[in-house]
Image (spheres, rainbow, N blue to C red):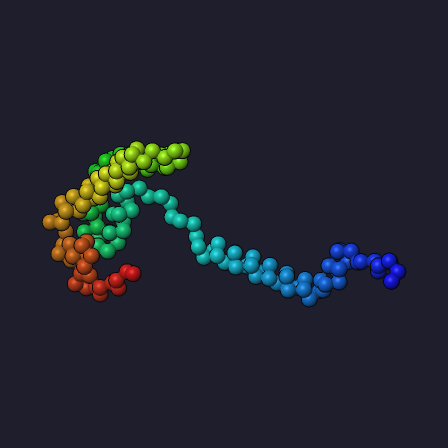
Amino acid sequence: MSGFAAPQPSVLSRLRQRISLRTLALASLALNLFLGAMLVATIRNPPPPPYRPMPDRFVEHVAADLSDADAAVLRAAFEPLRPRYDALSQEYREAGQRVRALLQAEPVDFDSLRAATSAARAKRRQIGELTEETVLSILPGLSPAGRLRLVGGPGPEREPKAPKK
């Protein structure tokens, strides 16, 4: 054997030999399908709705199942409570921020974290209790069908909803 080896083709020339027009067309097709799927996903999944504060989310969700008269009673009961809900929501957000700050601290002070978590839970409970008391206070002013719908029943003219999983 002579010690001379045949010259090796460069990487670029080997790549040129392997890539054919058919391979480029398939790669282009795959990229176009991917971009088309991304476009469809963007159009079909719109951004989330704008933030609505408490009690608006709750009232509009519940009012959708009530008659117009019962929905008006519900909205009228919650409207004067808006400043109280705003204050409780702000306190709840601040309590949540304290919990996040304690979780990010190094080392984690678990006693303070437990106290901050309890404070946040108490604020969330206050919001729930205010909502519950308000709903209970308007029950006598609602129609019988409205009371039934408010507690999750179908009402006389509707079919029951399928249970959620």
